[in-house]
Length: 231
Ligand SMILES: [Zn+2]
Image (cartoon, rainbow, N blue to C red; front, top):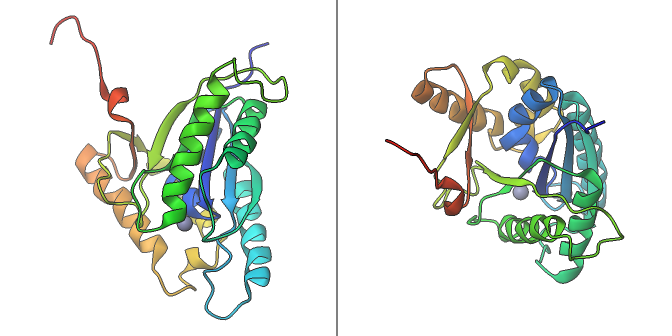
Protein backbone atom coordinates (compact mmCIF):
# COMPACT_ATOMS: atom_id res chain seq x y z
CA UNK A 1 0.00 0.00 0.00
CA UNK A 2 1.20 3.50 -0.86
CA UNK A 3 2.30 5.49 2.20
CA UNK A 4 0.42 8.65 3.10
CA UNK A 5 2.11 11.86 1.85
CA UNK A 6 4.38 13.45 4.41
CA UNK A 7 5.32 17.00 5.44
CA UNK A 8 8.58 17.70 7.28
CA UNK A 9 9.60 21.06 8.75
CA UNK A 10 13.26 21.80 9.47
CA UNK A 11 14.02 24.65 11.87
CA UNK A 12 17.30 26.13 13.06
CA UNK A 13 15.80 26.50 16.54
CA UNK A 14 12.81 24.92 18.26
CA UNK A 15 9.81 27.23 17.60
CA UNK A 16 11.02 28.63 14.26
CA UNK A 17 8.94 26.41 11.97
CA UNK A 18 6.22 25.80 14.54
CA UNK A 19 5.62 29.59 14.48
CA UNK A 20 6.00 30.09 10.73
CA UNK A 21 4.42 26.93 9.28
CA UNK A 22 2.52 25.32 12.16
CA UNK A 23 -0.96 26.10 10.87
CA UNK A 24 -0.07 24.73 7.43
CA UNK A 25 1.41 21.60 8.99
CA UNK A 26 -1.79 21.09 10.99
CA UNK A 27 -3.91 21.50 7.86
CA UNK A 28 -1.94 18.74 6.16
CA UNK A 29 -2.32 16.47 9.19
CA UNK A 30 -6.08 17.09 9.09
CA UNK A 31 -6.00 16.12 5.41
CA UNK A 32 -4.42 12.76 6.31
CA UNK A 33 -0.73 13.53 5.84
CA UNK A 34 2.05 12.27 8.09
CA UNK A 35 4.00 15.16 9.64
CA UNK A 36 7.34 15.59 11.40
CA UNK A 37 9.13 18.56 12.95
CA UNK A 38 12.93 18.54 12.89
CA UNK A 39 14.91 21.07 14.92
CA UNK A 40 18.66 21.30 14.33
CA UNK A 41 19.12 23.07 17.68
CA UNK A 42 16.86 23.96 20.56
CA UNK A 43 17.57 27.70 20.48
CA UNK A 44 18.77 27.32 24.04
CA UNK A 45 20.83 30.50 24.29
CA UNK A 46 17.90 32.89 23.98
CA UNK A 47 16.83 33.19 27.62
CA UNK A 48 17.67 36.23 29.74
CA UNK A 49 18.02 34.43 33.07
CA UNK A 50 17.96 30.62 32.57
CA UNK A 51 21.17 28.73 31.80
CA UNK A 52 21.49 27.28 28.28
CA UNK A 53 21.13 23.76 29.74
CA UNK A 54 17.94 24.62 31.63
CA UNK A 55 16.44 26.49 28.71
CA UNK A 56 17.35 23.60 26.35
CA UNK A 57 15.32 21.23 28.52
CA UNK A 58 12.39 23.66 28.57
CA UNK A 59 12.49 24.27 24.80
CA UNK A 60 12.63 20.52 24.14
CA UNK A 61 9.55 19.93 26.31
CA UNK A 62 7.75 22.84 24.63
CA UNK A 63 8.63 21.58 21.14
CA UNK A 64 7.33 18.10 22.00
CA UNK A 65 4.08 19.56 23.38
CA UNK A 66 3.67 21.78 20.30
CA UNK A 67 4.34 18.92 17.85
CA UNK A 68 1.89 16.69 19.72
CA UNK A 69 -0.76 19.40 19.55
CA UNK A 70 -0.20 19.73 15.80
CA UNK A 71 -0.25 15.97 15.21
CA UNK A 72 3.43 15.80 14.24
CA UNK A 73 6.34 13.68 15.44
CA UNK A 74 9.20 15.81 16.84
CA UNK A 75 12.87 15.12 16.06
CA UNK A 76 15.91 16.86 17.52
CA UNK A 77 19.39 17.01 16.07
CA UNK A 78 22.11 17.59 18.68
CA UNK A 79 23.51 20.90 17.42
CA UNK A 80 24.02 24.05 19.49
CA UNK A 81 22.29 27.40 19.19
CA UNK A 82 24.50 30.02 17.53
CA UNK A 83 26.93 27.41 16.22
CA UNK A 84 25.12 25.90 13.22
CA UNK A 85 27.32 25.45 10.16
CA UNK A 86 26.58 23.83 6.83
CA UNK A 87 29.08 20.98 6.67
CA UNK A 88 29.18 17.44 5.29
CA UNK A 89 28.36 15.72 8.59
CA UNK A 90 25.16 17.62 9.32
CA UNK A 91 23.98 17.40 5.69
CA UNK A 92 24.40 13.61 5.73
CA UNK A 93 22.69 13.34 9.13
CA UNK A 94 19.67 15.33 7.94
CA UNK A 95 19.58 13.63 4.52
CA UNK A 96 19.56 10.22 6.21
CA UNK A 97 16.69 11.31 8.46
CA UNK A 98 14.78 12.55 5.38
CA UNK A 99 15.31 9.19 3.67
CA UNK A 100 13.78 7.53 6.75
CA UNK A 101 10.81 9.93 6.86
CA UNK A 102 10.23 9.93 3.05
CA UNK A 103 8.78 13.48 2.87
CA UNK A 104 6.62 14.74 0.02
CA UNK A 105 7.15 18.34 1.17
CA UNK A 106 9.94 19.93 3.22
CA UNK A 107 9.58 23.40 4.74
CA UNK A 108 12.57 25.36 6.06
CA UNK A 109 14.02 28.87 6.39
CA UNK A 110 14.38 31.38 3.54
CA UNK A 111 17.98 31.94 2.39
CA UNK A 112 18.47 35.38 3.97
CA UNK A 113 18.16 36.11 7.67
CA UNK A 114 19.38 38.38 10.42
CA UNK A 115 20.27 35.12 12.20
CA UNK A 116 23.28 33.16 10.87
CA UNK A 117 21.80 29.86 12.14
CA UNK A 118 18.74 30.38 9.94
CA UNK A 119 20.91 30.91 6.85
CA UNK A 120 22.95 27.81 7.76
CA UNK A 121 19.72 25.81 8.22
CA UNK A 122 18.56 26.90 4.75
CA UNK A 123 21.80 25.69 3.17
CA UNK A 124 21.88 22.45 5.18
CA UNK A 125 18.26 21.59 4.36
CA UNK A 126 18.59 22.42 0.67
CA UNK A 127 21.67 20.20 0.42
CA UNK A 128 20.04 17.41 2.44
CA UNK A 129 16.88 17.44 0.29
CA UNK A 130 19.11 17.11 -2.77
CA UNK A 131 21.12 14.23 -1.29
CA UNK A 132 17.93 12.47 -0.18
CA UNK A 133 16.50 12.72 -3.70
CA UNK A 134 19.46 11.34 -5.66
CA UNK A 135 19.68 7.55 -5.43
CA UNK A 136 23.42 7.52 -6.16
CA UNK A 137 24.11 8.92 -2.69
CA UNK A 138 24.14 5.88 -0.41
CA UNK A 139 22.58 6.81 2.93
CA UNK A 140 22.41 3.64 5.03
CA UNK A 141 20.85 1.84 2.05
CA UNK A 142 17.63 3.85 2.46
CA UNK A 143 15.48 4.52 -0.62
CA UNK A 144 15.83 7.91 -2.33
CA UNK A 145 12.92 10.35 -2.10
CA UNK A 146 12.34 13.62 -3.93
CA UNK A 147 10.60 16.33 -1.84
CA UNK A 148 9.18 19.70 -2.86
CA UNK A 149 10.95 22.46 -0.92
CA UNK A 150 9.19 25.54 0.49
CA UNK A 151 10.45 28.41 2.62
CA UNK A 152 8.30 29.75 5.45
CA UNK A 153 7.92 33.38 6.48
CA UNK A 154 9.90 34.20 9.63
CA UNK A 155 10.08 37.68 11.19
CA UNK A 156 13.89 37.27 11.23
CA UNK A 157 14.12 36.11 7.59
CA UNK A 158 12.29 38.91 5.76
CA UNK A 159 15.16 40.19 3.56
CA UNK A 160 14.23 39.33 -0.02
CA UNK A 161 11.40 37.02 1.06
CA UNK A 162 8.69 37.12 -1.60
CA UNK A 163 5.65 34.91 -0.93
CA UNK A 164 4.64 32.70 -3.85
CA UNK A 165 2.25 30.11 -2.39
CA UNK A 166 -0.39 30.92 0.21
CA UNK A 167 -2.26 28.36 2.32
CA UNK A 168 -5.68 29.28 3.73
CA UNK A 169 -5.34 28.42 7.43
CA UNK A 170 -8.52 30.09 8.69
CA UNK A 171 -9.88 26.83 10.11
CA UNK A 172 -6.56 26.03 11.83
CA UNK A 173 -6.06 29.34 13.68
CA UNK A 174 -7.53 28.28 17.01
CA UNK A 175 -5.74 24.94 17.42
CA UNK A 176 -2.56 26.47 15.98
CA UNK A 177 -2.68 29.29 18.56
CA UNK A 178 -2.94 26.71 21.37
CA UNK A 179 0.04 24.76 19.95
CA UNK A 180 2.00 28.00 19.38
CA UNK A 181 1.52 28.93 23.01
CA UNK A 182 3.11 25.64 24.13
CA UNK A 183 6.26 27.78 23.94
CA UNK A 184 6.78 30.39 26.68
CA UNK A 185 8.04 32.79 23.99
CA UNK A 186 4.81 32.06 22.09
CA UNK A 187 2.92 33.37 25.12
CA UNK A 188 4.98 36.59 24.99
CA UNK A 189 7.07 35.67 28.02
CA UNK A 190 10.35 36.43 26.25
CA UNK A 191 9.39 40.06 25.66
CA UNK A 192 8.85 39.75 21.89
CA UNK A 193 5.19 39.58 20.76
CA UNK A 194 5.57 36.51 18.51
CA UNK A 195 1.90 35.62 18.40
CA UNK A 196 0.92 39.19 17.50
CA UNK A 197 3.42 39.25 14.62
CA UNK A 198 2.44 35.88 13.16
CA UNK A 199 -1.27 36.38 13.72
CA UNK A 200 -1.08 39.77 12.01
CA UNK A 201 0.89 38.37 9.07
CA UNK A 202 -1.63 35.57 8.44
CA UNK A 203 -4.42 38.16 8.61
CA UNK A 204 -2.66 40.48 6.15
CA UNK A 205 -2.19 37.60 3.70
CA UNK A 206 -5.80 36.55 4.29
CA UNK A 207 -7.07 40.03 3.40
CA UNK A 208 -5.03 39.89 0.18
CA UNK A 209 -6.51 36.50 -0.74
CA UNK A 210 -10.09 37.07 0.39
CA UNK A 211 -9.97 34.64 3.32
CA UNK A 212 -9.55 35.24 7.06
CA UNK A 213 -5.98 33.94 7.53
CA UNK A 214 -3.27 32.53 5.26
CA UNK A 215 0.35 31.42 5.67
CA UNK A 216 2.84 32.40 2.98
CA UNK A 217 5.69 30.41 1.44
CA UNK A 218 8.50 31.26 -0.95
CA UNK A 219 10.13 28.88 -3.42
CA UNK A 220 13.26 28.76 -5.54
CA UNK A 221 12.94 30.89 -8.70
CA UNK A 222 12.97 27.77 -10.91
CA UNK A 223 9.92 26.46 -9.04
CA UNK A 224 7.98 29.51 -10.25
CA UNK A 225 8.20 28.45 -13.89
CA UNK A 226 4.77 27.37 -15.10
CA UNK A 227 4.22 26.19 -18.66
CA UNK A 228 0.91 26.97 -20.33
CA UNK A 229 -0.24 26.10 -23.84
CA UNK A 230 -2.26 29.34 -24.03
CA UNK A 231 -2.35 32.36 -21.75
ZN1 LIG B 1 15.52 30.83 15.09
